[in-house]
Picture 1 (cartoon, rainbow, N blue to C red):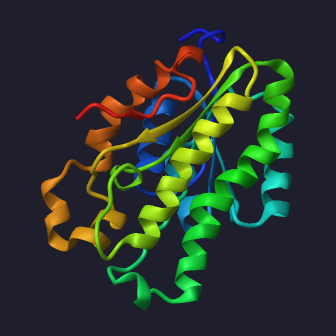
Picture 2 (cartoon, rainbow, N blue to C red):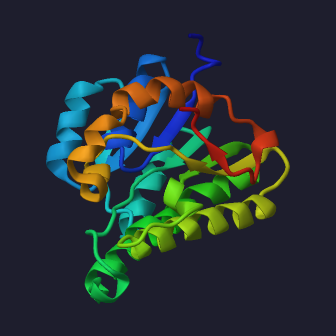
Length: 229
């Protein structure tokens, strides 16, 4: 891959699950990955696994931490692609039994975390009128399931936030809400228990997801897309 083809890619939640699979696969293709995770142990594991990337401990809920991270990344140039992947799911429970603390955690990470990353990275991209922002939604961002109202609410918010952002971006850029599909991750195990094992692993999923995501262009701006199964 030539230097010209190498892309700078920012990925949140890059040290586990889908984010880790995307980081590893995209790095193997020669792209420069700037990833973050919330726990030092997972960041160190990912650094060892993907030596070509740059991974940092960042809590996306903490705006000051995101600012510091963004400043360091932007010193190396504008991102060509931002993938907001960091998210959590609630424990299965009727909405009235979901505590305020747990509900707030989902809102903080799944919605505010994306807004923080956009606030810190996107102004520079807008000034240059280039770059693509992909915000991971969910099947439950376009449909619903009992016992997961809190999670559904945040993913519906991701859809709306992203589609509105798409209308605000200059020509040449794109914001895309992306449903990754159903993948066997720790989050799915929370929802489906042992049934999660019947779905593809993150690594298998990434083989289709990566070329699909890397194929996005400005013409996809505002489109609610889904990774092919």
